[in-house]
Length: 469
Ligand code: GLN
Image 1 (tube, rainbow, N blue to C red):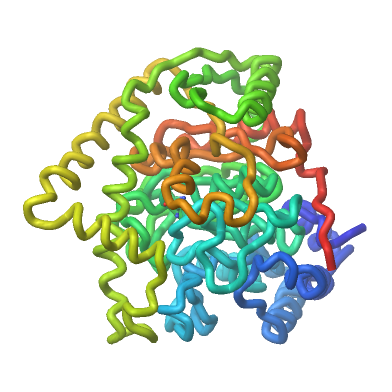
Image 2 (image 1 turned 180 degrees about the horizontal axis):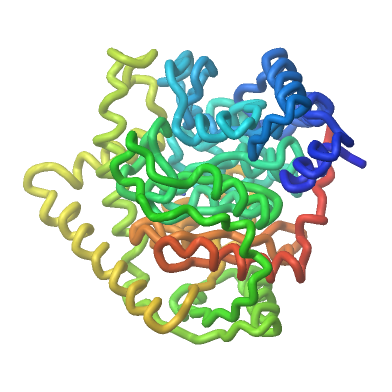
């Protein structure tokens, strides 16, 4: 048995049966990270000695019959999640030596559940990007295709989970950043409903669209972790008090969904991507779901609305990094952050706010109505994640507009607050691809159930990357 191949579900079973220990599991993952990550760049910080102690303590607790849902399971956190006593850089030189005094709620919930943080993963600085290339810690390589991007901005977590360095890595999704690396790394990338998971202690990108979750290799693992990290948090006023389900327990329930296929989301796609997505949809049809063509007439406004809204919030959120509180001053911001701060500041400025920010806010309402109308007819929406397959390093990075095209299919769910997921489907020319599912607010269960049908049929989690030492 290869310990690094274990999912959370399998690890918990074997730990429970005392067939493996947390020390063995942690050691196996650390060895694998040490051997292969120098060529992948998925981690910014790898914890070592402390982790071994924490794993030993988890094993002790298990002996004493302590029961915790993640006891002894190693997890990785994206480096924009504050972790008490562990350096947190957001991949920007501005926070190069920042060590937080407190934990993000997400980190705290996982620690309280018994999980062990093995390290902090690479990202596009501040979450700005779709490829993982905007980092000062080495650009992550796609574990399935060296020289190709991993998707972003949760690039390191996507790569780490795909590379079997850990079974779960956290991520933040402001415009697609969990679903995108999910799609390009052949893993499950979840974006919960806005307000389902606390944003407290996750470095804010755009406060009205930031959504917090994780990447895993299976749907069960994704559902299980959501049931632990979701819920109301007095420290984040936007979190909902709505009951948290045991999402992993309803995967097998019989469910036949009406799935909406928005015609606008299938225009101008790469042919390979379209073929792979259409094949996945056929699987769903075969499993008893029905496909219904729908129209989202305002789809073309989604990216412009996102760009203005999110850049405006970025310019306000990043203003706090003035050198007084955290490490270095604003001169350390790099090109992408500067670009977004400038677009945002301009959109909000006197004389222009009516034309840009307020106009975008109105158009955002149109996008919300499009989804509301669609969900009166269908239970879920299905489409690709990216319009094209994984690209090579630098292919898009030199032209920001080419990069922004990556986001056209993911940003709407952030503007409307709907939950979404990327589920691994058949590769396109040997490169990973994902099916995106989007559900009504707080209906994450539907994503998991239907995603599970795809997973059961294709079993893409069995396709392992070949890593280079
Ligand atoms: N790729 C998108 C962007 O560059 C989304 C980023 C995110 O979700 N953090 O804005």
